[in-house]
Amino acid sequence: WIIAPMGYQAYYCDGECPFPLGERLNGTNHAIIQTLVNSIDSRAVPKVCCAPTKLSGISMLYFDNNENVVLRQYEDMVVEACGCR
Image (tube, rainbow, N blue to C red; front, side, top):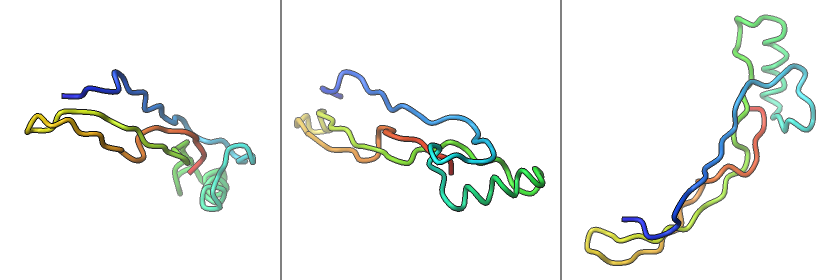
């Protein structure tokens, strides 16, 4: 049973990335090449997608199976930034 937090917002990244990738889209070198190849032949590789580039953790307070109160940190639970991957 979870004591806290009362709620949780994971957020998410969504969508395809355009060609050419602008600097603000935070694309990797791989993503830049993939968008170039896709622009030449869309059947060769799929479009690059928006994906998490930075994640943060959350703390959770809960009862374990023995009814002990436990505080645990869960890493990589909240999307903080997105980019083209």
